[in-house]
Length: 92
Image 1 (tube, rainbow, N blue to C red):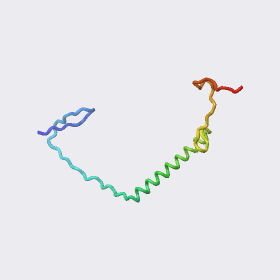
Image 2: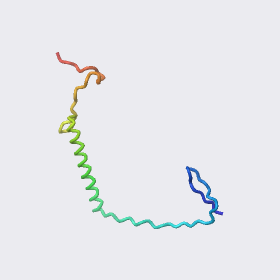
Image 3: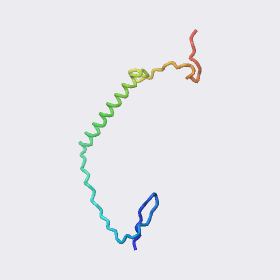
Image 4: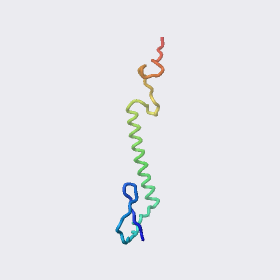
């Protein structure tokens, strides 16, 4: 006697009234072979797109005025209430 069960809502439930079961295993579709040239061309395309997007992001950050052309962060004065050390010292 064969017992058949299916999963429903995380529990295995017996299926009554099944007299026979036929299983057919289909052959998977063949995966096309990828040559190293194709892989290299794909990687080059991806890297070029990544470089383009990083360049766009870099330019966007530079347009904010928070960094200079070399990538150095420009420090801006903050109001005293934003600093844990109080207002900046003033020269006399």
